[in-house]
Amino acid sequence: MKLNVTQRVFLAILAANAIIVLCMFLIMQRTMDRGFLKYINQVEQNRLDRLAAKLGKEHVSRGSWEFLRKTPDMISRLIGETITEDSSQNVLPPPPVDMKREGVPPGEPFTGRRHYRLERRIIVLDALRSPVFGVSNPAEVELFKPILGVGGVVGYLGLLPSKFVSDMHQLKFVKEQKLVFAFVAMIMLLVAAAISLPLARLLVRPLKKLAAATGHLSSGRYDVRVPVDSDDEFGHLSRDFNALALSLDKNEQARRQFVADISHELRTPLAILGGEIEAIQDGIQDLSLESIGSLQVEVFRLNRLVDDLYQLALSDVGALAYRKSDVNLADIISEAIDRARPKLAERSLALSITLPQAPVIVFADAERLTQLFDNLLDNSRKYTDSGGVLEITLEAMHGGVTVDIRDSGPGVTGEERDKLFDRLYRVERSRNRSSGGAGLGLAICRNIVEAHEGAIEAFHSPLGGVWIRITLPLSEGHQ
Image 1 (tube, helix red, strand yellow):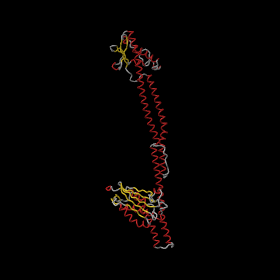
Image 2 (tube, rainbow, N blue to C red):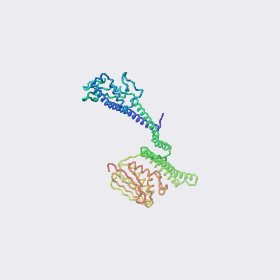
Image 3 (cartoon, helix red, strand yellow):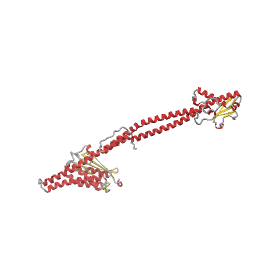
Image 4 (cartoon, rainbow, N blue to C red):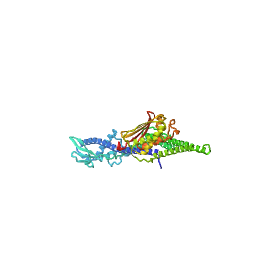
């Protein structure tokens, strides 16, 4: 039989309460036995004081202990008198009717059975501590009470303490108390069971909500959220679940947007290719070097998009090869600027370059860094208005190196800057397909920088455009 979580928690709480109730019941029983036995011994010690006084009076009236040796029943009579006195003072209730005469030897005066058991534990010694009455060993008695007569101590009275309750009336009383304890324990157990079930449901309720929400999440409902009602472990788990659901929701939206954007990017050059080929086939457009060149441009655009996607996919799975060594970052940037100068000049972009004369050594893949700066410079060329300015600065400090690329307008908003490194993202007013690019270049740049344990960020440029900052660690031997 398989139990659900609620049933398991209920049984665990109930079992814990049952163990506690059982321990309390056993402790109360043991305490009852010891406490009642202590009470009985105390009552008997009090009775022993009165019995010693009575024996002292008898010794005074008779002159010796000879009467006790000849008539041992005298002890039984004197004990009976003390029992009668206790009954009148309600020290102990009188024995029940069916207990009278039970176990009393023939010829013993009728005073009940309780004093008979007491009589068997009594020891009387004379003034010289010689036995006068009793069959027990005097050495077993812990304390003897003096019996006072004419002229001082005439004897000693001792009593062996009870080690267990033997009187039927006392046993009945103890049994009744134990039954009461057992009844209370059962009531406590039933109350614990009645409380444990709703408590178990209350404890498991957040878990059930999480289980239901997880089921929705696994079925593709990423908008599901779990209410956070506490600050305990369930509350932390609910917050983590909500964060996971939000992350999955964003990833799913990004995936859908990525697929839509890729489809759109592929559809446009394919549509152009198909239209121009159809126009040539229908004779609307002549097959010329110009038409072939137009087809080649679209094929090149498709090839560049597929190549960018391939590079990005390799970087995501960690399969992009990096052959790192100590390289001079200043030389790599200078070479990239030299390659970009002709195209920058076509748009009349003024260059401001600040590179240190001393080598700036980083542990990196020169080919990937070349790809990084070629992409960044090409990106600035495409999205900076003609006649603008492009500033490039390289600075080494505090064990790292910083590369700043600032361009003039048009600029982008803060929200748009946060998305510049997202895949296929383009700022619509300044980035368009006619100027080239599918929005993958900066995403590839970010992967290359992160693979070199660096960081790339976008800020508002003081020149009015975008400020790209790259930080890379210096080589360990050149810090």
